[in-house]
Length: 366
Ligand code: NAD
Ligand code: LMR
Picture 1 (cartoon, protein in one colour):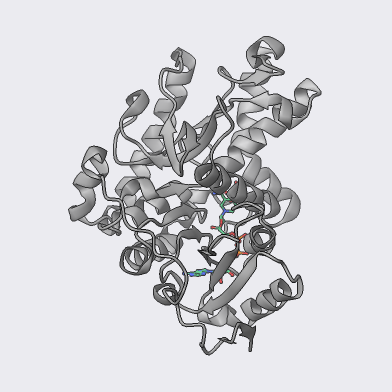
Picture 2 (cartoon, rainbow, N blue to C red; picture 1 turned 120 degrees about the vertical axis):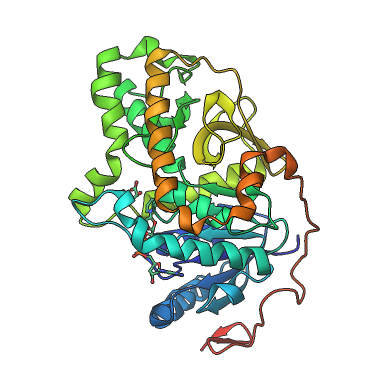
């Protein structure tokens, strides 16, 4: 049996986490041979609800679930974690855009960036889900001067999966038969779901769909899918978001299929002419726990306009949160080549947060 890895999850009593934690404990994210320690974090008012979630996790008797710890602050909850899933934040309601959440959510991520910097494992991999996800990832990363920006990502896999599902329905195939969709840019209505590199059964997708369907129906539908779900459910997506978190982390940590392209929100290094210093969704491949941007994809005039629109939106969002972006990390975020920090992996065995806390004792929920 392998040594357990520590996975910290914020917003652990929320709707996404209620779908996510059980998948992680079942081995869907880190593999069926990887034991996990769940370090669950909530705001103080939600600790009672979190106890209930922990009891349910315990009641599933998952063979891979090594330990659960509960925390009402990120400084303790991030202690020595190898993976940090930043889910906790306010969701939007009907009639709102994700960027309307900036004011209420942004500060959460500066504190979390600092706590990751000070308490997480030096190799920690961070995935930001809380909206607006790209700009929150920038805030967290810019507040963690001792970690490399390449350790931070934001969730755009949900958009990637949505695009795959919609194209599969349109072509009358299953999602497994679709490859190499690319989501570019922001997790917002300006994102650009690009099918020019996608294949259906190994054949170019663009040859199998009408251009007018692609431009007038598919693109806006993927861009607006979050709102469509909120309008139908009264609540934002939760189960599909949890699946996307599992998929993105699984690919990042365990690798993508040979030749397969997936989409991840990462710090721009200037690839495809996108300004450095913003978190932008790019086509990537992953292996050995690292991601690499797929270079050389053809970007025609139509695509370029879409890339520019979403880039401009992210630059604008960055401007709004400028006061939360410390100057000391400006250079490391615009010149990635100086960020070659790589740490020693600290494993479980007494290096995590205390297992005797006011919420848990001997790994039993109090
Ligand atoms: P939710 O309201 O059901 O749960 C959020 C939880 O976070 C709550 O339990 C709350 O107590 C907790 N929380 C708030 N601030 C916290 C903090 N500082 N530390 C720890 N916990 C904190 O919301 P949800 O449906 O789970 O969605 C969570 C976030 O994810 C929202 O911002 C939503 O918009 C976003 N989201 C993003 C994507 C994506 O693809 N990027 C997809 C779906 C939802
Ligand atoms: C989504 O895309 O479903 C989430 O970002 C939630 C939202 O506010 O749309």
